[in-house]
Length: 79
Image (cartoon, rainbow, N blue to C red; front, side, top):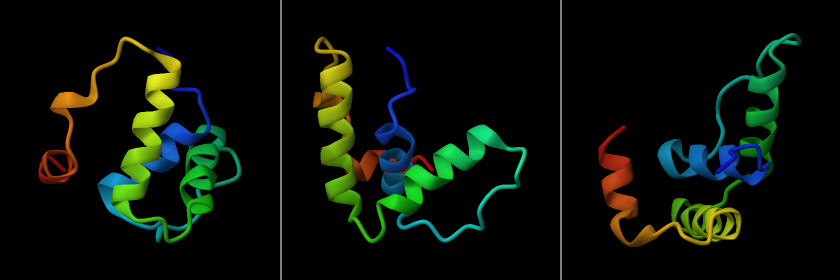
């Protein structure tokens, strides 16, 4: 499965850390800027909504993926 989908980094960061509050990465950090922009674009999306969007996106990219063992509280506790 590829993680190049533009929604993956933003929703993942929102679930783990909440709304984007970090400064934009430097000019030459192309990958970091893409991830930051995806995260920033989600604005005040709740962690729960971001998790639903993340799961829906991953299921589209990999229909065999099983989200049953992945829950919001467990993912937050591990970071």
